[in-house]
Amino acid sequence: MDFFLQCRRILRDPLIQGHIDESKLQILLPPRTIEQLERTYVECEEDKLETQLEKSLDLEVKRWNDRKEPVQEGRYYLSGLEKDVTKIFIASLKRTAKISETMSCKMAPCLGRKLQDFLTRYHNLVVEYTVTLKKKEKCFWNITIANINSILAFRNLLESKDLRIQGETKETLNHVLHEFETLGYNALLQDLFEKLKPHFKKLQHGKDRKQNCTEIMDNVMSCISSLKHLCQPYYQVMISKIHSQMVLEYVTQVLENPVRLENSIQLKFAAAQMAKNADKIKFYFKRKGSQEIWLDPLLNQLANIIKALNQEDTINEICTLAEQYTDLSREHIVAILHIKGNINIHEARSALEKIEYRRRHRNISVRSRPLFSRITPFSSDWLFRGYRRHGVDFCCLNICGFVQYTRNMFIHLCCKLVNVDTPPKYYPH
Image 1: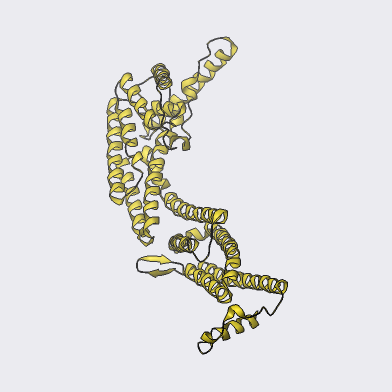
Image 2: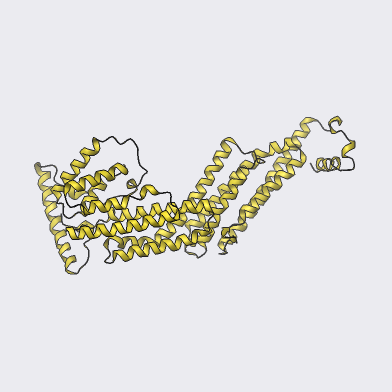
């Protein structure tokens, strides 16, 4: 193949280019031999490409392990790997194009496969890095941001007309890049919300609930200030994801560990605090450009349910919530009713039956995005106990219920004596 490159270089020499008509030159080798030489060239080029890509990726992984901060260009962190890969592919395309257009067309599918193999290996190495203890390293956040930013260059390479990547190969590569993005987003979100988890746990049960929400917002603001090193499209996606995750964590704490509020003063205070927190979250993320506006009414609607003083108002507010968030289940409604200490077990059952009747007779054609389906609510056994009213089962159920009630009452009184919130599963019903 070097012989052909030398011939091509001679024929392209400016001194003789205008004196030779290539179309009249006879083929020096039989077609079968030329095909064999072309296959050999493609195989050699593939091996060369693979070796160069592996070397670049190994150097990048070494930088991660050596805890080296990524390169900063302007305000964005970049790994430098995306530039190396782009140069390697472009160099391969140029070498092939110098031989002939036919060879360039034959080489294009190989380039697509090699890019897919490279991105898959890159993705797997990032997964390995993410799940190790390196998350505790100071540079973890910046390295993850650099890896997300690199996806933009790979998408541009994928759209390159020279690579001629189309059809299923292009769909597969786009899927790999989408998984790569999701991996990076989830790594950053997990890192942030692991730090926030203790604050969220205190949000419903701590004595200074207002201060806990302020601490959460301060941590979120600090995190978002670090995201300025993300390229713009990815920055906006992360803002929306943090907004969504924050509301989800808040509602999860409300429903998984509900605090039963015993009188109207407690209900109004808790509702007012939740409404303030809701407005704070809403306006902050709106200012940052979050696209998750469908979440904005949620916490305010929960606050309206909590402060409702009679059964009819409670039913109306829950039905309004169920219309907007269609994955709100029976168990979630029971957990919400559990918070309202001004409703006893019989009123709660009655309210639940009325809510379910109204939901069955309303035609909701538009389904909302999943939110409540991602939350496992507080156990609803207390509400459904005693539905069967005959036989030995009913007697045993009542005895167990009385024992559980006595135990819960004792724990509840002890907690009140030491001025501590009663754990939700020990509330007397």
